View (cartoon, rainbow, N blue to C red):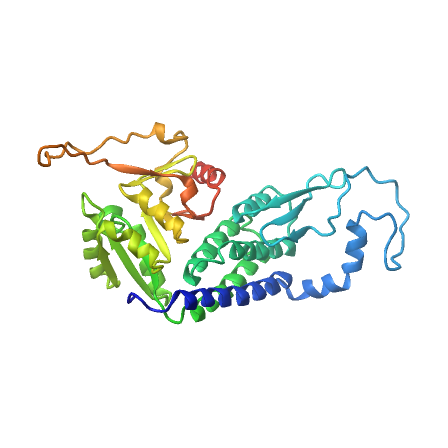
Length: 381
């Protein structure tokens, strides 16, 4: 990707255009997950209002039905199983109906997935509708990011929702439809600009074995027809970035190597869509032990509005390590003296979970908050 392509105003306009189109289309998709559902919703809207309304009298001439006195239900104005609020989704907890009606607010895709998994919603078309609106919510939350970075965030949220109820066809269909449309719009909004991925430290086969987690991701994107350009930091003191560049050359992936001191310049110029880090140790809280320099890179990326993703296999998850104090962070072998002073080379950084947008694992992509999802991953490792 050549530096200087486009202007900040043009990039902002492109993102606004993408989100307007995507938001409008997603909302439409969420209302019509199955062909017959929308017609049924329109024809039965009045009846549903009467069923879930807290008003004493039926509305619009609906016929009253003789029935035993119902149990007391806390007052609520909620008249459907869910309500989309833009930055959150309100769900009617169906587990204790009719004795108790409670509203649960979900402000993240992982919270919606948890609600589905715990049975707050019944099965059926409603799962697909809620999942589609959950992606619309995520799109609202990342609307200020470049279009390719939005697509990455949406894909991670979709993966999190998909595993919440793998037996629901409605859920899978809704997610597929929304993501397919989002990727189409992103491709048009990007105007052919390569997805710019910043990789800190080596994430190729030399550190991953026969398959490198980071390079596999880039190869997958390229195979899907998404142009990719990798930006690599030198990652001193071991200069892992140079070895990463050597591997990407063999994989025919376009790349550019920059010194660590150029990281701020690169991010400030808004030429990066995604920061990709390599995890060495994954804590129960979602904090990550990563190669030296990863924490600075993650913090600067977050300040620049760049998505921060971490590649981590389930095998490095440590449910007993609740914080960094449980992890040995000894430095490498003593380095030679530099001049009249001394030198030390720390071995690793702790990247707080609050700086991470996605955990890319061999069990799927996880979105924050991570603790509950990581516990389930650990149960099956």
